[in-house]
Amino acid sequence: MNLLREEKSFYNILMRELEENDCEGFYRLMRMYPNFFHYLEHCLTPRLQTKDTNFRKALPVGLKLCQTLQYLATGIDFSDMHNAW
Image (cartoon, rainbow, N blue to C red; front, side, top):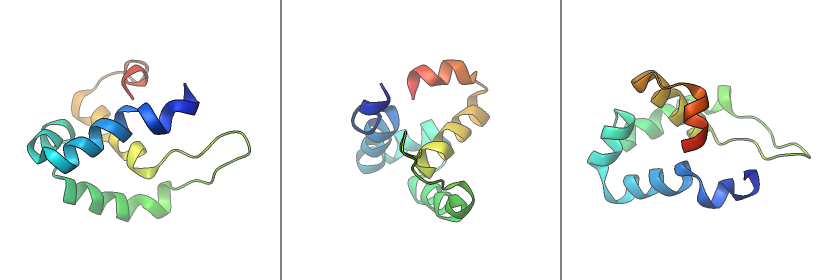
């Protein structure tokens, strides 16, 4: 599953599609517009960015931000979010 994360994950498919084609859908999902999301991502990158290891690739800062915002917006449990992301 981790090997396919870059190709078939919620973040890589749906988030990019919403950002490019449905700005209002992106807003409903993230509670902010894509330009502000990217601003936050840019500001938080130095604090959230990690390095790849021999065992796995580091999670992108945008994915970490998406998960955090979804948790704060919905209150959904992390174990439930695991299945979607």
